[in-house]
Length: 212
Image (cartoon, rainbow, N blue to C red; front, top):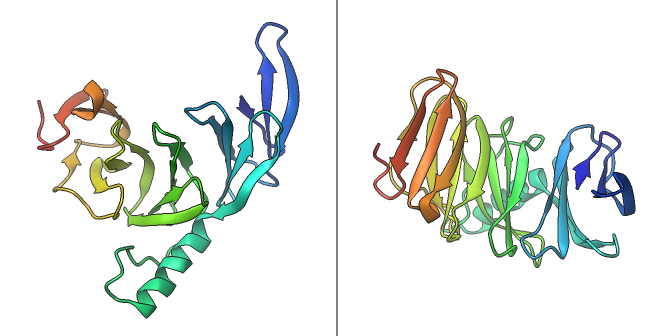
């Protein structure tokens, strides 16, 4: 599965080294990506215009509604205006997407935007936002293997953990010295690995958020 500058995602026959049908036509947007769902039955595509879409992997037809990262933040603002006690977090920033990822069940999706400093958790079944998170200069976000937490990180070395259902922050977070290049869960979500521009790799306890 590959994503192309013309806004399409394509499947490939690895033996023949040829593209095969169907073609998933997300639309304009030179930058973006595509992922298989864990079940292998659906495909997720996203574009630098801030939109995401689910597709039927076999037939190539879109599933449900187009998901709009910026519109999700606007919906949260509207909910907060009506009910200040709403669990979704108030946001007022917009921007193109860095990336998106499924949880391990394929029932939820997380998308992130550096320019907006926002992370949106989506219900894959309804294509509606379930929670919205604020992390300034966020680079990426992913679910832990259990699906209970979302980890986000910024280039400035800050890693945060969030409740995947409510979007509320959990703990004080992790601070990797210097510029952070990436982060990943390890040991079934009990540990976190971070690596930076200083060529250091560090291991952390995901629960205590302390170095190991």
